[in-house]
Length: 86
Image: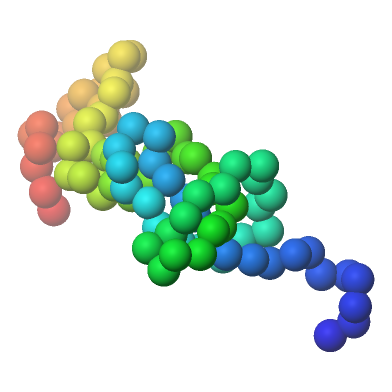
């Protein structure tokens, strides 16, 4: 690899802002904050608004927000019942 053309790729701790969930990964993100991981080493800390711990898709609490009735119109147009699976 050529020197000087690749970004600094290092370990970063990603922490969920609304829960205590955190994981260690690699990234090019830069952060002024640091914290100690379970291995005793200090890593940069990136606080994320949402992670797999709180995302509705992964928690099973996903809701369809439909303010204009588009889902119902679609279901009526194709003769489907609400919640029907094909």
